[in-house]
Image (cartoon, rainbow, N blue to C red; front, side, top):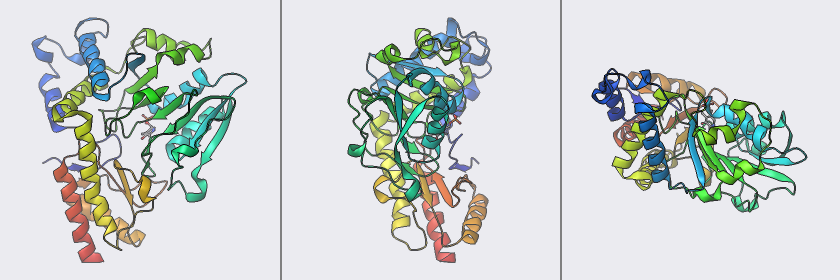
Length: 359
Ligand SMILES: *Cc1c(COP(=O)(O)O)cnc(C)c1O
């Protein structure tokens, strides 16, 4: 029996995707070798990769004037690559510090150039987000940086700032393909795939091509987005296994009805849990209701002893990954695209029963 998987990342994958991998891992579609044994130049990998990129474009509605490709190194490498390329000498970059992930990106950028923190949620312990209309780039800004969904804090921008001519760069690691996005409003969108798109290893990069006209020159090869753009991510060996699985997840998303269907699903699933939290004094959400995340639901119980008991007993029911991140404590249920509605229902029932017994 498969466990119910609420891990924040790596995280649940559609079981059909795992089965397709199982069925093809030794002999990919009767070609006599595995996808993970094939060269990444030409042949079956590149054919699959091109389909993967085309499907990603189609599902997210990525315009023609944007590059799409995958790199290694995780989202974390992008915390460095972004300022190395785009934080121009004599200029500044604007960062919105909204929680663990945006804050890490800001601290890496600060080591590489002049950073202006235009929002810092420290005073509210990163439980709120600013009004997007209040986000104005500073005069000398190379770009504005935000994180769409703070996976650890459990907050999510519901709409995005309009930064005019200054490119908006966004980390969408944990909410990509959970809702429609107007890609044309962004200079760059990126993220690790291991939350909503596949197994760990690959990082997706979506970048407006003219971003390359305003980057620092003379950076080392791997750091250079222009080099990756020219090679659609195949300058060096890409994470082939992860990319193959992403392709299969994208097939699954398409079959399920695309991003609009994922959006409705995310609304339905998150409401199932938030409705339990809202209708009880036993459960408590520490974050601003207006910006609470549909992907990562952070909640508390009346005391830490009960939280420990909740985790213990949920494990016995085959429910994994409900412990909050060590930096914030409490509980967290990640309800990514691939998590079946039945598993959310099981959590809902478990929460109600736990309150009945312990409330
Ligand atoms: C998980 C996560 C990261 C870090 O991703 P790595 O691939 O581990 O580097 C960055 N940003 C967000 C929003 C995340 O959820």
